[in-house]
Image: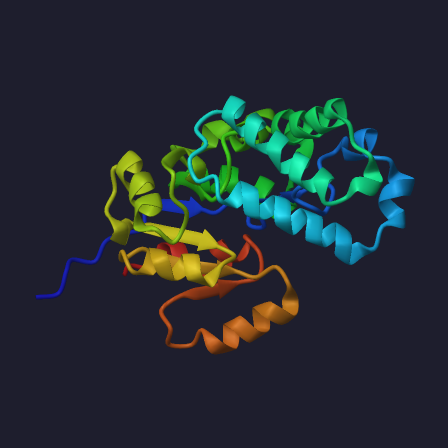
Length: 248
């Protein structure tokens, strides 16, 4: 027997690169980064060595699965910048500078900026649907939304480090569904990562892959035919393609 078709009642969003992005162009270079790091010394270092330092620091932070509070987040990002500093001794960073870097990354809510289409679409969708964030992120993400006045638009706000798991673990999506009090068939999930979209699809959630890069959009659009997920180039297309009005 076929299951009853249900109307979409909720939209679940990834956060980074879907609704917002780094205000500096680098997730770990916060707005006041160069108040603590000497710009001349930094620019004199080979780019690959800098990237290597960020990679090693990233390996540390990515291994810290459970981070429930901003206080814990600060402790771990202090260690992140200690690893970064150890791999770039040319910067001659002192303890106070490292603390400053960690403080700015965790507590500066201007570290991310929202895409214009997100600022427009979120209030429009809220009038018709329940909304949720399902993001691989840390506790301070909530402050970014609160400062912009967007936090209250979301009925569920699922952050990976608080749960101790990351997408595409099914518990990330199920947490949002539980808080929204809906079935998987009543939800749409929007992410810029196809693996995460497939994780949602495995639960029966309709998935939409967002590709803001035009070339990637056309490639994914071509190869998505018959794969069971939609591909969009911007959030306005959520309305233009009528994907939210379809029954699945």
